[in-house]
Image: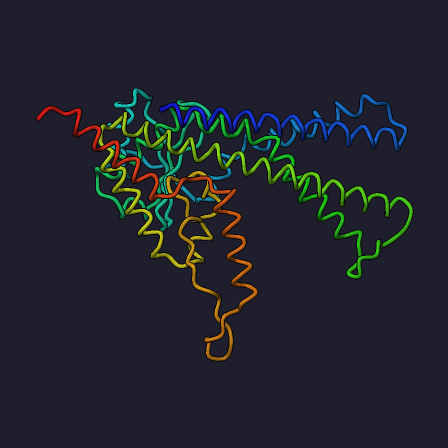
Length: 341
């Protein structure tokens, strides 16, 4: 991995550590405030924070199996999918990894990702859309990219650094829902005394947790983009064929662009895991309304554009395909220069 990627990764990791520490302190302080209010012993503060962090951390550990279920994938072997099994076996040998479990989803959108925290427990999931979209060389490059994630232990690493942010996101959702239930449509609290206090505390927790959630997600997305570039470089190191990976990424992006918005949104659950995120190819046309379907929904259009800007600026889990292809083309030139005539 080059120095610029290492520097970016180290910077993102340091900032994530600061945000995680700050959120943990805020969580302990929150439990401490509850302890003072209700007259509980102060040991409730660190114990309550630890229980929340460990509980949501345990939920994060089930994420891989949950993603495979959401992808509706089924395991295949050399008899049921000989082409894919052969390519994975060859690339695994080149990467000096054990043979992975392989699962295939019936999704028409091209997807490929790995789950599992160790090489021995990893599962490679590939969609039928991916198998149809790529030739053997391109498919081998995509498999190498995913196996580079396995060698780098990216799933375990990303899960570990995501726990505080996952806790903040879940607390934001729960406290927001609680606050909405306790506050009427006119903004008045439904009840007095303890109900009003709970509504106020829920609103405060929602605000604080939402802020930490956004900061954490932004930093994790930045970290993820660096890991994707590192996996691209790892794939080149495994196969020695940057041109095929560049071609595969372009083919996947083109194929994703052919799918309707509904199909792409159905793949959002695996967007952060797959080799090219479906979120990168959302169409840019405004929603059309009116009896003739010729009147743009202006508010909806600009709301969608704002959400797209926030996503592209802060929450993208993958670098742009154009950037990745440019880097791979530069790597291809290096390979050609290093190869004697």
